[in-house]
Image (tube, rainbow, N blue to C red; front, side, top):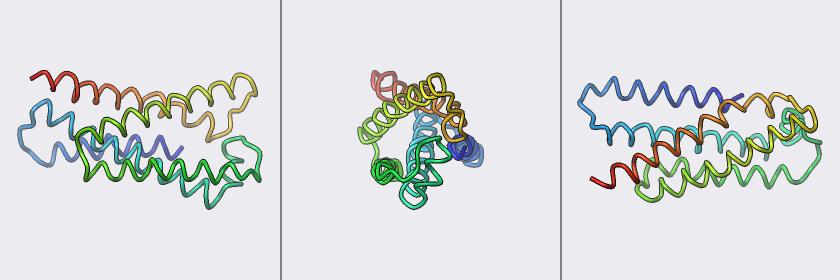
Length: 159
């Protein structure tokens, strides 16, 4: 659920940033603007919320996902999310190929998570809020990030 909120916030903040600046942006600058917001919000902040929830509230988080409680695996998942949080937040300060690696890695992970959540819904009827409720963001986020990366590193590189 928080993933969906952060996705919407990402789009709103990037758009407000664009409108407030009131300067002419090139297409490449618009791509950079939205890409940095997507990396910060949908990698950094989503990773941070995953870190906090899996490490500090593992049983409640497992319950909301529809997983069994009491698993030490939650701690590992939390630190995995924390690593992505670091990469997404650092994207504010480190640019270039760092963005490419962060965006590709996160998209790969999210597509795998999407597959796992859909599989869990089909095979086990798991429609828990943190399993089924984040499907929309798991579809949109990697698609948008991959399109922005393609534009930045393929289309605009040819210039």
